[in-house]
Image (cartoon, rainbow, N blue to C red; front, side):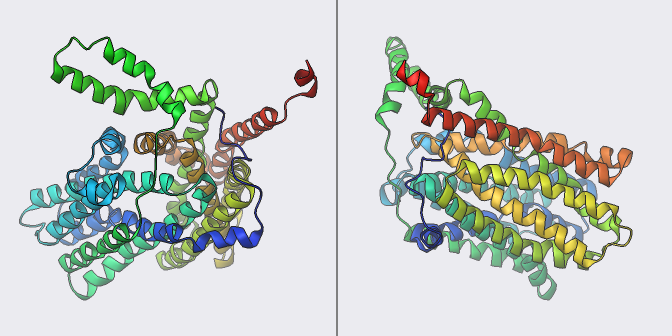
Length: 463
């Protein structure tokens, strides 16, 4: 099997049919699940830091609280459990994916209510434990939502699903960020967290209304798993408890890796390189974006108005456009367009850095270009990652991909401040644009490889 191809979707649809994809019930429902996924993120990060600051908690302790977020980066450790372990009663009533989703949301709601009922100045340790529960339940919800999304619709609809997911996610972050600050200003932080806990009910209602996806193990997957059955059969003489552990580890952990490399062969390394490099440019730029705005002379209010509110609108517009393009043109070409635009729009930041007296219009142009391209690339990339998974191991494989896609960018981004100090913002933004070129080249190679596979050389065919 090769990489997802441009002809993986049915015949090209009209623009009208492509836009109509957003009227599908599951595509709409994905927006509400995105809201449920995005809601808790800031509540254990910047919003929680603000609450702790007002409670006179030391900055050192606030820094330690950020470690709670590591939970999101290691979710692939328990993703195999979600893939393989049915929940008593919940899985029977709702199905495998929705059962785990509802359990995670219950933990999320309980953790937020627990945080709301805890006084940071009196019981900081209890607040930390409730925060850890929120982060763990939130990461678990992310795994199950991703698995449901991939299994619920065909590949051609994944771009639209990604777009509505991003829309819901961003609106939830606005609610958990600005919304929590507003509630805390007119009432208190416990009240703000109580309201956020109640809003988890949006996701719960969505889970109950949406259907369970029909995912089955393909014949090819069963054939590829035969080696595991043979390996376990050769160890049938071992104690039952040991065979049980071996069976679970092989089926839940080893088989997803073997399956991916068996399906893609030598192409698997190229695909993994693309997954790891695709977001290096935008993650690296993102580290220095706000410091750049401030150093350029923009006020906090101007940054909030243009970068946060206007930027959100442009991101949602880009995400919607990306979803439509995936339906109309397949995955690879919109993905290439997103990679090129991401690199090119980083140069717009370099242009802004050269202006002696940049105004609001220049900031609006820069933010528009960055967020529009980022939203479009995000929808296409999520659709691409979704197409790489096997529904027999959806949660495990996607959790690994989503972790891999951020690690290199976070590592490279750690040097961004040093580059700015040594060479200035102009060269830094040019460097981030160059950092996007490897992903562009890999995508060009994959598209050519796909075309060669679909249209072999006539001379080779005749021979």
